[in-house]
Each structure stands twice: as C-alpha cells, then as structure tokens.
Length: 544
Image (cartoon, rainbow, N blue to C red; front, side):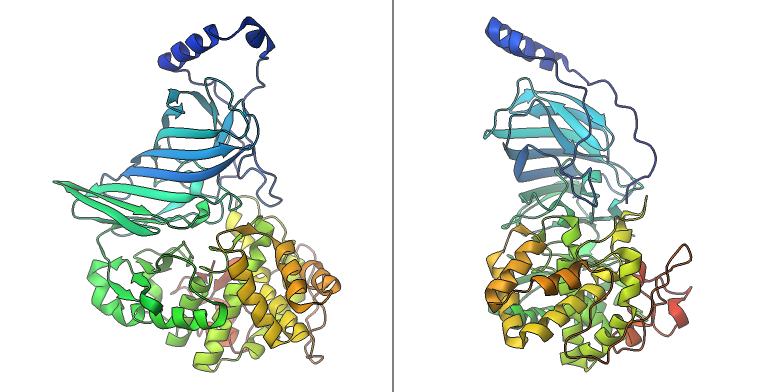
C-alpha cells in the first residue's frame, strides 16, 4: 500500500550535459517558424488515467507494448537492486512529456529513442521530457537506469528468509520498476536477473536463458502472453524448481525453498489434477505454463501472479487448515489465471469479476471434491451481504480503499458477495446457459482488459434475454435483491454509522459449510477453531 503522507514538492528537472547538447543541436537545425511556435510546457505534474478507485495510477497518451527488465541482485534481501527498465510503447496522442509510475528507488538516467532525456519526479510519477515532442502514432523506446529498493515500506518486494519475491497487487508494481501501472495496459515482459551463483531466479513465463558467470549467474524469462503490471513475479532465493506435466503436456514448474522440496511434493503433485478440473469447467488453460511459488515469508495473503501463483509456506507445512480447505485455496489462485490474469479488469471497480469468479470455482471445487456445498456457503454469505454492501459498496461499484490502506479494497463484497451475483445469475438463466457464458467469457476476451459492461453484454447475448434489471439490482444496488429460487434466504439488517463493523468471520470450516459469516474486511480468513477468527497463534489469510 502507498504512503498517505503529503506529496513531495516537485524537484527541478535534471538535465544531463549530453541531453543539453543534443537538444541544442536539434533545435538549432529547426526552422525559426517552428521554434517560435513552440510554447514553454506547463510545470511537470503527476498524471493518471482516471480510475475511480486509484485516480493516480496509469498514464495517458501511450500504450506499452513490452517491458524488458534487467536486475542485478547483490545478495541478502535489504540491498537495493541495480536495474535497467526498457519500455517499448506506441503513442496515442502527441506528447510533450511522458509520465511513468515509479516510486521505488533512485533514477540515474533516462533515454528516449536512444537520446538522453530530461526527467524529474513528481509525487509517484517519473516525468520525462524527450528532446523533441513525440508525435501521435509513433513508436517510442524509453530506457531508465534506476535502483529497486526492497526496503520500500509501500511494498512491491516481499522479503523472504532466503531472498525476495514480488507482490504488486493492486498498485505497487511501480515501487519495483517504472511502468504504466494499471491493468488496462497489458504488455509482454522479458525479465533478466543476475544473482549470486548460489541463488536461483524465476519470473513469469518461460525460461529463455541461463548463464553462469563465475560468482554470479544470469537468468532470463519471457511471457508469451501480455500481462498486467500487478501480476509480475520475480522470485530470488535458495530455491528448487521441480517440474512435471499438466493436461496435454502443459509444463508445470514450481518454485519452493530447496530445503522443503520433499515435504512439499504431495501438495505440488495436486496441481495437474486441479488444472484438469478447471479446464473441464471453463476451457483450456490460457497460458504457456503454470506453477506454485511457495515463499518462506508471512505475507498474510496468497496472490495470483501470472503463471506462478504466490503462496505462503505456512499454509502447507504445519498448517492449521484442513487439507480440503488448502486445496480450495490453490484452486482459487489457479482460477485467477483465467479470471483476472488472462481476462483482466479494465478498471479496479471491475475487481468483482476477478474475485467473484475465483471464489465461485474455489467453492465449487470444495463441493465436488469434499462435499462442502456451495449453496450452504452462499446462503450464509447472503445473510451478511447487506452488511458487506453497507461497508464496502455494491459489487461493481465498490467504495475507494481506506486512506493509506490500498489493499482494504479487497473486502468481503468482492469475494463471497460477488460469488452471490454469479449464483443468482445461474439461478436466473439456468445452469446450461451459465456454463456457456463462463466458457465464452474467458475465450472471447483472452489476453484482454475488459469491464463489467462486457460481461453483462455477453450474458445477454448468450442467453438471449434482457438482463438489465437483474444486473442493475445485483451489481449496483445498496441492498441485496431476493435470491431467485430461494425465497427462504434472508439477510441481516446492516449496522450503520461510526460503530458499523464487518461481521465476525467464522473458521474456514464454517465459512465453506454455512456455519459462519464468510470473509471479513480485506478478504481475510481466520485460523480454524477460533471464535470470531481471533487467534494469536496464526495470522489470517488473504486471498486475492
């Protein structure tokens, strides 16, 4: 999450001598009329693309095509990494300046199309002024030499016992590298990491290179599908990388602490079957490979980083959670590869499409494999759904996160509260039409960033029905509508005013069988067997 302190005063742009010489030569060669027509640009300012929940994220005027990240890790997990970020983009309008999101290190130099460029930082933006303006529709190459600091209090990097992993959701990829940090602008990634020779580096996608350099080694990875910045994963540590095959020979590679490889193998062996189960529900897995990254760190959350989902070691080894429940958590993050990663949100208010679907398949897996019925779970969620809407807004119009607590966006209403929308939809259109919709959603919009209107429009197309009133009530209503087919389901009256608080959460066993209230604020799940979810011995889980 980002600091809530006042933005720093803009500092004067830094001008390199080479940049001044190049600019002078080019301007000297321009016509007098052109020079006279150029007006001084306004002062550098931080920009955004107007996301209602994160208005300063992203930047207008260009579309990133690819990122090439080169990082040098010097050992330990507190020393800043040296980095070079290269960005290929296409401008969508004429730009006097280019803004990137960046707040995680020192910037040493910037070049645009091979020429040194002036730059400054304003708030959490790196503001770049090329030698000459960039015309609309042109290709642009931006190279930023910088550091990437794992000590950044706002996140991005997670320090593990033996190294680092990234966790960039929702808005902290730009504390790791300069970028257009919004899921509406997906791009291809190449990541190169140089580490001490005894360490292993793994990133999203497929490995395309590994070179030993004596005391160091360089690892290279590339995605074969575009990816949102919030889904970047770079893992560095004393890791083992076991491999196996999934359905149709799909490469499955996991990243685990080397010391725990044997103990974790029974869990890792579950992944191919889980992929096969989900493919049977929604269609072919959408990426080039998949795997489980198990970090020796207490993060308090699990995260669907693309092709390599991040999990805490504690939920697998010495876990207080029953096996069936951990299985469902694994399926939750796997389901995100379709819902949230391949099909990404256009705006953060579309988050319900990510988490509602991942929760849906998590619960369906628990029902089919372990007998914990979805209807019982969702009936209990329905009881608390009015409170969730009062606390966090309706599913498709969530309230902004609390100041200084950006991950507070991950409230119960986007998890079980949004799975209720899908359940009501299935009750309304029938199981067969609902399943066709699910398959069409992830196939038609594969690799895209789309929004709620795309889903509702597709639902009407697939079913041949006018669902305007249904979606208006279920997605935007302040109160939860009656559940189709279940007139006996009732909601509790929400508590309002300053004393309002999320309902107490049950143990996971209760949450999935109807014995409790579901997830409290932040999507947290308490340790089992503890009244109200209070347990000082075990930190809660957050599923994202």
